[in-house]
Length: 488
Image (cartoon, rainbow, N blue to C red; front, top):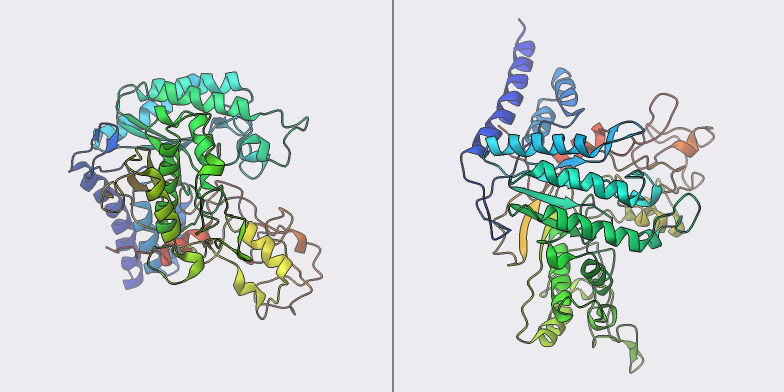
């Protein structure tokens, strides 16, 4: 046997041992939910590796990229969420009994290892505004039956439930297809579904349920606070931030704290004017309610930028949060916020991609194109990395932060973000082909091409479908992890 062949076999063995060892290590310490708040010593469940990951690890090792294989192995040996999407198979809706069985299997397996699973319920009617991750239950009644099956599968086992990513930050009325014949879903129906789910899931005293709070660069503090109150956040453990996105963890901590403060200011009342009374992240100075007014001919505040880390200490105006923090402290007085939150750090190690690279040579894209790219920078942006490892030992960061979690499965595509999909708007006449790996501008397939990833699959130029394994992105996430992955 050659030395290289022996090395490959050792890599495969190490990959298997690393994943196995991670599970054993996780089972060695207790896992608990005390008062529905995750204990600092919580060990989260490590599910089986994502479909496509092992094949890529083997391929990398076979072609001599041993470090890449080990990086992906380390990524797959890290605790991640398990998603339940309501599909039994392509085009077939999952029955309540089927999801009950799948949930029961997952929580039982986690219990064997004395770990706590993170489960994602992702089956809301009108999901993702009928875009890349379209799907979900066909009616509110069907959804409520499905979520009842989900809850039944939990039994009395310990679990964290991430309830319907994007369901509240992206209400039906925010969708471009809202009110059309093909999109009959309403905000009232959405809120009723979430309230129903909270009641059903929280019946298990060992489950912590978190609702969709968007992220730090999406809805304003007041807008999402009101929606969370309407959705029944008072009856849940709290809300989650940054699922399937890339915003800096520190920015999400600040945003989550402000949302909790805002909810406390309104005491959870449905009649409180959260939008007008709560200072928001778009203006970092001036009194509440006058963020867009002028004072002595100048704006009283400046919009915070998502493309840098926020803090009270920085001298950079569009990253400084001291004005917002001071206003909340003054408004709250002796009132203490009590709504908790968790943050998805599975892909935010490098923060969001502002796409400014593509303004320069050889791309030379105009401002209008850069603006469209920035609007769509949630979808498979290049130069992204894994973020902070999952942990519930976060009280020193914020008493309201229950955990950092890997909710989005790293390595899975956000969708087919090519030019035809509208996310990768591109002026193909602005640069001079050929650029290595790119099709000529005259290609009839160019409108299906992703210019940021330079992908071509057979005769089709596109990213993988939402949820499919994306090898280029998976390896990039592992290579650019921040903090860096620890190799065996």
